[in-house]
Image 1 (cartoon, rainbow, N blue to C red):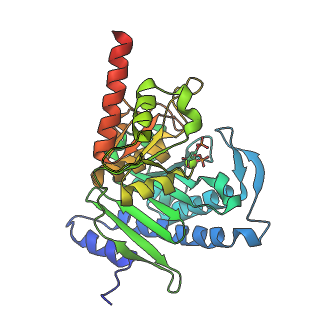
Image 2: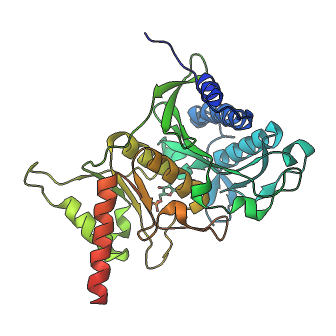
Image 3: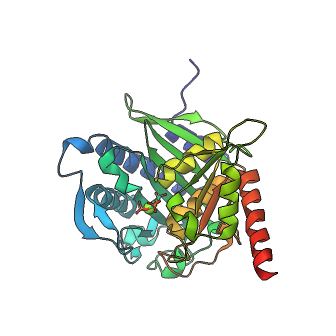
Length: 341
Ligand code: AHM
Ligand code: MG
């Protein structure tokens, strides 16, 4: 057996590679890892305790029913950020407004975090994988002052780090600071995330596609054409592509990262901006996709180039293997050209 590298050790080693690093981002990443271990523990025993499983009774700003675990995870991460001292404010899927921290230590914090504490939480009751997604920016306002909306609403290209935790058949933490992507598996026997997937690269193509096909008749004709192409029998294999849709973005994305694939959540006639939120779902996964060789777009524009206008802004989302996303983009352009012509 080769030497085990824990996440903590890995973060510290990376920090040493940057001569002017102060350790604040490292401490923040360690806080995220600690919070996610606690959430992982709660997710793993949710079925046993009524105070963990089931609906909370409230509805979040998106109009979605909150699960008890959504609220538990949200409060836990917020506490971790608030008392960690590196973060001056947060934005979360479960809170209508952004939350500036008013304790003196936090006001000095350099970073803001945008996060989805428990993505795919409608899957909790049926024991299907769920995840946490996070995006970290350096604040724009002066250290020592109260965090502002401007700190929150930065383009994805300004992220300093992003990642996700997948509570799947094992718990994994995958993150990037813009120098490649690394994945860590939680070893429950020692309570540590251990490096299991160094320098992850998303395959350039695959024969997998992932979409809620209930939306197929109400989405862009270019997407319809691409999905039709996927469903045609390929003479070289005698088979069409395989459709894979878990309905948990983190899990669907993770599969694409490992096996290749394309994930599509389109704008529809009723919801032209789709469902997924730019700041804490699309941007962080876009950063990981690009760092591993993939692409993330809304069909017209690179996700990380979009100037955000609000905390809970939604965008159509296409993310995955380079060749597959490029082919879908061509289908969109061809359909648009036919429409104009
Ligand atoms: P959530 O943040 O409220 O859990 O919603 C986001 C989830 C994603 O994880 C998933 O990809 C998508 O919603 C599924 O939506 P749909 O049921 O419309 O296919
Ligand atoms: Mg979500």
